[in-house]
Image (cartoon, rainbow, N blue to C red; front, side, top):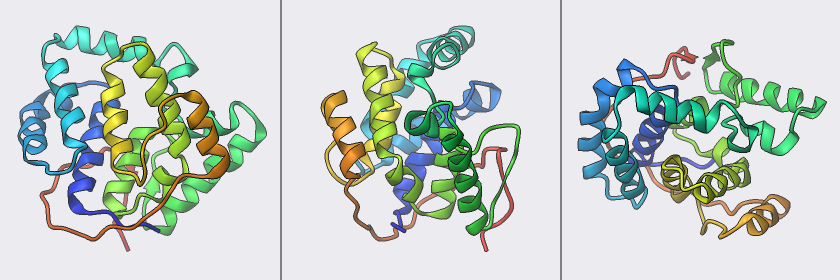
Length: 210
């Protein structure tokens, strides 16, 4: 387990909100997100601020359309991490069970309205549990999604860049390097805890840390 700082936890909370389906709660939080990201010292703050700036230029309808067009019509931009490792195979079912078991081991239940490998939920869990274990284990999937979005010039690539910037080691430059990372395993390190503020929970995770 790799403990994360409270500042990185804030990055994960905001990234989770950015990658969840847009709605009133996100729109109401935009000003707060802008204020918080402006105060971040971690390099991940810069791409998050850039994404939030881009989103504020869109109407609510255009934001929703951009989200749906990006994530709902193709697996090439899948937000489900086990899709990148297992596709639609039997192995994926076992991977999903492992996600749920990991949540339960940290004192959280998962709302079955979504799959447990849904990236916004994984980010929310990582922030609440103060560990980047799941994100580090699925680093190649995160990088492949980042690259796929960047190749399309999609602003959501900025959110993935922010998440990847919190993990140890440099990001791969292309798909070949990302696939090599998948074979060799991502680098790991631990960081200390630092005090930081509190943001709200997504509805997918319930329960208290034990």
